Every structure is written in structure tokens, then in C-alpha cells.
Image (cartoon, rainbow, N blue to C red; front, side):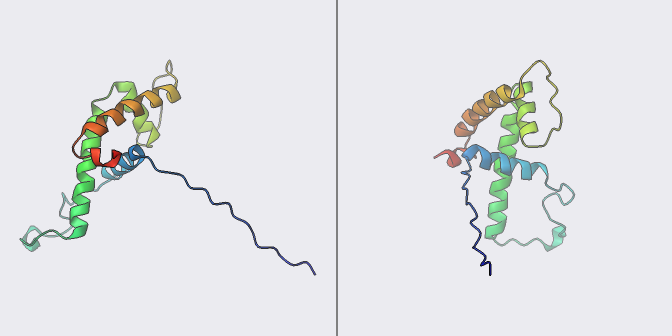
Length: 127
């Protein structure tokens, strides 16, 4: 009889940096649906004057972060902008053959992180 031993599955913890969190919110903001223009399929006549619920507040905060990150990425040098977009799978091709992607990405992340630390919508992630 061959008794089965329990499998050992190695657990690895990958820490998410504040830059990763901000870029994740930005990617979700990029993929948002513009069809509803914020109403999510509801009629304007059905909108209440009541306070926003928790989900609406968090969605609004996430949208503000996504929008702020988008503005800061747009303000980067062209190659840095493209490197961030390629990192996040927004852009699919590296259009700077004379530049090394990994080096440009490192510089882009450094420049973007500096901007994110100063922005009112994103600085809270870096504390």
C-alpha cells in the first residue's frame, strides 16, 4: 500500500506597492464604460437627492485616483508615458527601438511615483 502524502504548496506573498495600487486603479478607470456617463444605466429621473452610499463613495474616490494618475502619466515624457502604458497592457508595442524598455520603465516609474506622492488624490497611498 502506497499511502499518499499531503501535497505541500508553497505560499508566496507578493507585496503590492503604492505605485501598483495607483496603476491598478488607473487601468480600471481606463476600461470604464462611458456609455452610462456615470448613471450606470439608470434614468436621470430616478436619481435621488439622498446621500451617496458607501459603494458610490468608493467608486468616486477610485475614479478620482484614476483620473489623477491619467493626468500625471500624460505629463510624463513620451517614452515614459509609453513605458507605463506598455507595463499596464494599455499599449501593446514598444515604439522606441533605440531605447531599452526596462531602463525607460524604471525611469518612468520613478518619475511617476514622485508625481503621485505630491498629488492630493494619490498621496495617501504613499504614507
